[in-house]
Length: 149
Image (cartoon, rainbow, N blue to C red; front, side):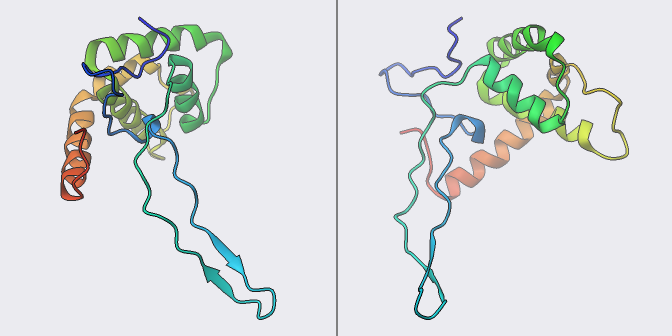
């Protein structure tokens, strides 16, 4: 498996993904100050274009997970990278990322917070939640005519 988890489609174009981690972050809204009046001025920006990252590695996903749970254990980085590769190979990138999000949501829920972050491989227990979230995001994308073509 290539280090880059983002795959090209049959035409060599980047594949379409729904998860925000696969996208280039949009620039923040721009405001300027009129120095004469002290007034904030909202500067119109062009409509944002949905752009995907050039590369996303297992290490990037592991860092995303560690940031989300606020718990890093350097001894498990290689194991967690292997877990990410397994999840992506078995379920696809989008479903793996949404399953990781579901695992994070369960972990960060105050009532169930464990002492240590759960093993990343446990994201495979959240595939149903991942599919539900993917369906919600796809419905929103269709509503705004966002698609891979």
